[in-house]
Structure formats: structure tokens, C-alpha cells
Amino acid sequence: AQSVSQHNHHVILSEAASLELGCNYSYGGTVNLFWYVQYPGQHLQLLLKYFSGDPLVKGIKGFEAEFIKSKFSFNLRKPSVQWSDTAEYFCAVNARIDTNAGKSTFGDGTTLTVKP
Amino acid sequence: DTEVTQTPKHLVMGMTNKKSLKCEQHMGHRAMYWYKQKAKKPPELMFVYSYEKLSINESVPSRFSPECPNSSLLNLHLHALQPEDSALYLCASSQLSRTGELFFGEGSRLTVL
Image 1 (cartoon, rainbow over the protein chains, first blue to last red):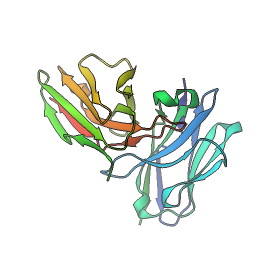
Image 2: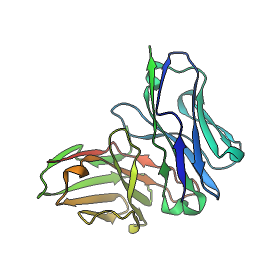
Image 3: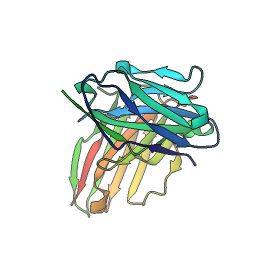
């Protein structure tokens, strides 16, 4: 079974600061990796995903993430955060073999608060 | 706005009531899911339907009964719930593809008295 660990439970930044949220996963096989975001009062939505190819993936709203296979990591980054980035961020993984079953495992989430 | 629609948005029920949560998607996705989310916690998978057949049941108590009438609809029937079942219930759908990213609804917030 896979597991996901997010290192930061709550991050507080000022606008224009740079962001990096850590995510490590545990699974011996090939995985798909995701970051989902949940803005206050809104539904969970996909921020970006990695399943193959370039390990640096770009998502919506200027976010990017880098898959480092040797470190089992998929950290989320943004060079300059905005107040509107205040949200809950979840890292998730599904095992490629299980894709048809859709069993995604989520990390505990990171609450990002951006101060104006 | 999400393309996965859940109703009702809020539900309050007693422990002896029977109620249902409904979910609908028109993206042509053939996998649909129920997740349970407590405050400040990640979503926990409850059920997965693939091609309208139950493919995963994560050892959910029988007081939760899922139903998938067709490829666009997913229901969760609730009966004899406990106060600890109070949570946000999320419906999601996905294509049965290599990547399997999830499209979530806004959720149904359930309170059990």
C-alpha cells in the first residue's frame, strides 16, 4: 500500500514570498502524483499532476512541482505567493497498477495562509 | 464551479433517520467515488464504482450503502448513523485512464444529531 507524508501542517507567508511545500510518498512501484487545492468554501480541485515525462510539471496559477524519483518526493513550489493562494493543499498518489481502481491516497494536507 | 454536482449541500439527520446523498456528473467518466472528509483532515476513500459496479469498499460500516444507478449518478444511502459520522461527504469522478485524476464535487456536509 502507498502512503503520503506532507512535512508542513501550517505555513504562514507574506505576499510575494516564495513557497515550497514538501511531499514524500512510499510505494515500491510506479506512481502518479498529484497536488490538489481546496480554497476556503470551495471544492477540491487539481493543481497539477505528474505521470511521466519531464519531472518538472507546471500547473495552474503559477504553481509547479518537481518529481525526484530517488527521493520519493514531489514538492510544490511557487516563486511569489498571493493572498488568494490561501488554501489547503493536499499531495496525493495513486499506484499506476491501481489507476483503473482509482485508489488515490492523500497526505494530511498543508494549510497555507498568505498575509496581505 | 465544478462539473460534479452534489445534493444536498447540507443535511442534518437524527440517528434513526434514513436519508440519501446524491451525486451527478456529465463528463463521461466511468469511475465514481465517495470520500469522507473530517475538518482539517484529508479525504478518506469509502467506495469506488467502475463501470457502475462496486470495485472498492474500504471496510465502510453497512449503515452507509452506495448505489450507482447509471454512469452519471451515484447515491449514498444513510441509515442509523452515529454522531461521529458527521463530516463532509465528497463525490468524485475520473476517467479510467493512466493518470486517474479526480474531479470533486463541493460536498454534502452531514450533521448527525
